[in-house]
Length: 220
Image 1: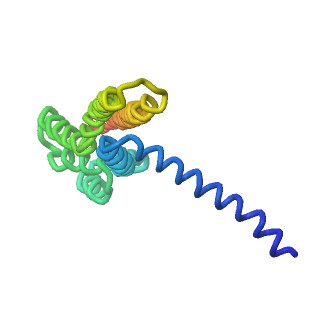
Image 2: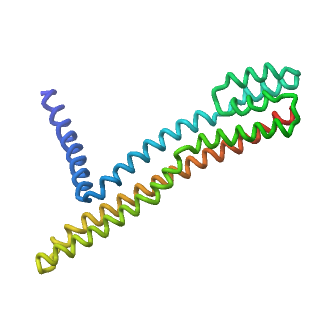
């Protein structure tokens, strides 16, 4: 009795879920061939955002303990020890500090120049491939509009063949027109939002990094 009651509860939920997925897939397929590049762009956007987010989050971690230890070693006249600490840090801040500490004893302008170049290089690495999100943000809505035009052409073509106007003929083309436009706009908005979110992460890191490096440069 208990087994029957459990199965009776699970089966409607399962069938309802699969039915919803099937209906969504069917709705997307009605968008026509233009939906193929739009769907591919959506998958690529998600992959690119996750990959860049994880990289930036890892690279932009600023270890306050490292900075304090480096500053303390420099104050105590131990630049070699500070350099070893910087080299042991896997983050971008470690590589930036390393580029400056390797030139310890050189003029401050030279040290600052090396650290600035290293900072620009690390920021460039973080921004790698994020431009694709900006491109997708512009292309996806345009593909949706192309699908809209194709849908309108299909409507008038079917009307010309049938030699009459009916709701059924018009609705067939409207499916493709509305699905393509909506999907393209959604993918474009998501890609646009993802691009600027990553840029905000990089900008925030740049500000925090500059504040941290100023403390080191003051000691040097």
